[in-house]
Length: 504
Ligand SMILES: [Zn+2]
Image (tube, protein in one colour):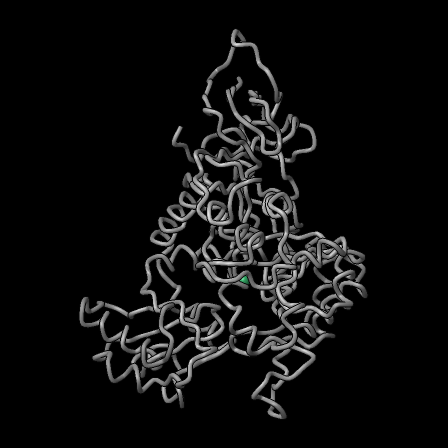
């Protein structure tokens, strides 16, 4: 069995090529641990005689063929829910957000809790409170979730429902916020699985073949169930959090191992541990104080896991073969995380790595720690960074600096914080701009090739022998303008040689 893709182009090369994809029996393809039936891989790239027999032939019409894309940091069920939520991301003050809630309730009174999403209170001049929402919500429980997920804002009815009745402000942060998010994220498995499948198809339509799902729940059973039910649009590496680490170790889960019975689609991902907060909430743990918070408690942010505890859990995970992925945003949190990798002597990733000490760039490379970054956050947060990390933004959202120091980059969206769309991510990495603004720290921009490689597991072009995880684009991604890159039309996506999306 074979599939021939005719008349394609490889970015960076002039000639028109044909690509033959061969399909092997389960487990036959060397170097690939899969139980998939008939995994497809690239058998030939170049001229293929028109007389060559093919099970199926597809004409690419001189479109560009690239490796299939990955989003290396997503919260998948949250992303699949956000599309269905009320958007408050445009509110530039607490009063505006409350107005938006009033309008929404007037227009269509919800039957259950009204869930809004996407506010950024970092630059608001007024302070949100439950009273502002009570005034407009007519007893409807209202929960607003911040864009970075580290904060929720509730009215009185929702505070009571979520077990925070009598809270002084209605604005909850960090663990309290996560607790509320877990509560409101609880829908039936059946409903959620439908939403997840829809979101997976949408991702495939953007050229995505795989995601690292860092949802904060035990994800193994949910993904196994979804794939068994026929959700086959994406590969998924699922993360494991501290509260589930022992369970994962008992089950013998090791990072990179394929879960049986999932057609090779589900793989054990990393051990995820969150060590500090976020920039918007000024809880990212930094060496310097946040302006305006001098001498206050928490003026340098918040370290949420003591370093000796982090050392213990990273050591435990690494010894069990589970690769650590440490969330660190502030420069101090990043330094401490790198210290832990150094002491344990294991590789892994730091998730976000938003503010770094100059001296730490090279440590990512020397320690073999992947910098798993989300360039679109820089576009969302450039103004907040200019204020709270004033004088330090030259080492914020560093991309070129890390690559030049020899570090490996892995790009992602952190959806729902930014859209699950690697083209948005790559455009931000390459252009450092959005909405026609001046590029922000353009010296930290990276090349289109580097952005693609960091979004495709290190591959910037397809090669013979590769698993046939591919995307077909309408525009050459190596010469596309930043705007075209952001909106890149994707004609087709193949997962192991099987079309998961096609307009061809
Ligand atoms: Zn995240």
